[in-house]
Structure formats: structure tokens, C-alpha cells
Image (cartoon, rainbow, N blue to C red):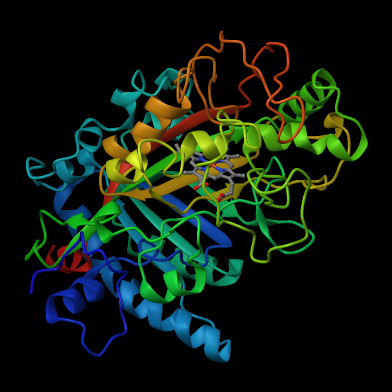
Length: 461
Ligand code: HEM
């Protein structure tokens, strides 16, 4: 039976009744797409091939270092039962120009954003000029090798093995190091100090069973992240996913100043002051959703995610908050967002070391202005319909969902000339006087689009 990507039921990957084609799909799919792989420590190698056949041999030689999605899921289950650690993650992505360099035609890829490459999409996304990107992103990047694990040592050892396979005709044009950031309770956070990586589309039956709630259904069909690998031996059974990589530098000091200025403008005092930052993000630092609580709640470990905005016109969670802009959660027209299929699987990692304590209340002056940020990564079935749609049509659009909403305060790019009004207090329909939008504190430093091919493709090279 062909793999049904739009199946309305979560995938029971370990079921004895799993059909043969789905098994082949799981045995040839890269890990970290259907379920996040542990990647507390990461190395991202950006590769340029001088010679196509050498490039092919290199990619084929990486296949034995890689595991399948199914192997990964088995490792996760073993870890949950016995705490036996899994093996490192090795992922491979190839850019459009990379495929051309390897001697392939790319006509069978259907994603226009992928086929253009990120540099040529900069106007669509309001990105900075390519000449302002970090040097290595200005170069032609043909492939990316992602290495991740819970600890730095296995990453270093695997990185060494990968580099030993690199032909003389190829070079590493750049490398990014990802390092997980955690708060005092051990929750993963981003550099502004907020819990991150919580709300994800879930594809697998065991994950959905562990999470499903009354207000938000985290299940999404495989069609959100998988597409047939057009260059694999059997594209109907061999699947891949489009990866977006963007290096997003965070000016933590400027964001903290913006939080303080907004708290002052709204007249927030004492324990109510963190409401200002929560209005920008949509959650308090500890992950408490503003939709559910007006103060950080100690309820909910894991962090609460069972909410929709259906009965909240913006009095609790402003419609312009980052998480509401980036996922309006079925709030319009009976679930237009779900029908559009925008939700992507975010798999990023923070970069840069901190000497301060990211989640505490120390003054803005104690915060870094650069050198730290997010290696934003996400898997998509359509870069244009998911990542780009989110960035362009929602985050960068001051008129979404309504006139006067303003840009996404965290990731919005473009001139912020619209003034915005915030609820005067949590769950108040009274609005503040119009305020200047918070300044842009996240700067794109470069990136690229890749396709993560099936293992069958890599072995066929
Ligand atoms: C959620 C921060 C970049 C899309 C979140 C959350 C935080 C956060 C704190 C809440 C945790 C969660 O629900 O998982 C940031 C920061 C960014 C960044 C600091 C840049 C430095 C992006 C980008 C996109 C994006 C580039 C897409 C274009 C989303 C989505 C959610 C989310 C879809 C989940 C919303 C939900 O389902 O409720 N982000 N983010 N983020 N972010 Fe971002």
C-alpha cells in the first residue's frame, strides 16, 4: 500500500500491522524530522564541493554514520525504558546548487523557494542584503552535515570521522556550534530567557497519546513534513523533507530594554511587570501561556500547551504576540491555519555562551548585545507554504491578523511604522494608548534552504 501522507491518524510506527511501504519509508528517512533528536550539543558543517563525483562519493560515505528514523525511534524507546543512551545524530541536507554541482537536474523538485535558494528570496523575507550576511553564508553552500548529541564528546568524535571522509576537492566554508541553554529547572530556553521548543506538530501515535488535550490537537499528518524524494530509487517509498536554516542573532539587551519600556508604558508594577515580555512572546519566561494565566504559573510540567485562541480576541494573549502570530491555532474561520498546512517542525538550537544568567531579572545593561542567538531550523513539506508563509504573510505583516497588529515583536522584519495598542491589564478589553512597536532585536545573519534526502538516495550515489 503506498504511504498515505495525509492519513488522518497518527503513525503507529511500532505497530505489528505496519504496511511494507511505510516500513521502507521509516528505514530510509533521516531522523530528527518526525521526532526531535536530542541535540544539546551540535555541529553544523557547511560544505562546498569543488568536484561533483567527489561530492557524491563523500555523501555516500556518510550513509554508514547515519541512522534511519526507525532506528532513532527505537533508541528513544530504549532510552525511556532503560536510560540507555542513543547514538549521535548525523543528518545531511543538499541545497539546490548542491544538487546541480553533484550533476543532478532539479526539475523534479517542486518547491520554488528551495529552487531559488535563500539568497534570492531575501526581498520576499525582508532579509538584510547578502553582503551583510556572515561571510560563510555569502558563499555557495552545497550541503550541510548536522551532528548532534546529548554531550559534546560524541559530537566531536563524529565530527572528526566526517571530516576524515571529506575529499581534498571539497571544503568546509563555515561551521556553526549549537549549545542548548537551560533554565534553573532544566527547561530548554532561548536567549531572551523564555522556554522554547514546546509547541510542535506531532506525527506519531505514542507522542500524540502522551499530549493530546481538549483545546489544541497537536496531531498533524505526515504531509506537513514529508515529500517524496524525487531523486531516490523509489520516490513513492523514499521520502525527504525541506530544511530551513537561519542564523538569527539576538540582541538580548535591546529586548530586555523593550520589555522594561513596555512595562513602564503600561504602568505595570512589581509582580505584574513580566506581563510586558509575555505580551511580546505570548508566554511567560517559564512557558506559562498568556492565554491561560495572567501570572507565571507553577502548574503544568511539561509546560502547558493545551489552549486555543478561539474565545480570546486578544484581551489575554495579544494577537500580535510571537506565538500567536506564528501559530494562530485554529482561531479563524474554523481552523483556516490547519487547512493551509502551515505548521512546521521546529528543530533549532541556541548558539553562543552566556556569562550572565539568562532567565533572571538582572538589568538590561548586564545582557549581551550580540554573539548569541538561535540557529533556527525547521522541517517543511513546502518552504514556501510553511516557513516563508509564516515569516512573510504573518510575522512581517503588520496587518495580520488585523489592521494595527504590528510586526511579530520577536522575528518580524521590515519597517515598523504601525503603532500598536496592548490590553491595559491581563484579560482587559481596555486598550493602552497607541505605542511605538518594540524595536527589531533579532537579526538574520545568513542561511540556506536544503533538502534532506532519503538514505536510499545517499546510498545510490
Ligand atoms: C514558539 C522564541 C524564531 C515560529 C516560540 C516560543 C518562543 C520562541 C519563546 C514559545 C515556545 C513554544 O511554544 O515552543 C523565538 C525566538 C526566535 C524565534 C527568540 C528567534 C531568535 C522563530 C521563527 C519562526 C518561529 C524564525 C518561524 C518563521 C514559531 C512557532 C512557534 C514558536 C510556529 C510555536 C507557536 C505555537 O504553536 O504556539 N518561539 N522564536 N520562531 N515560534 Fe519562535
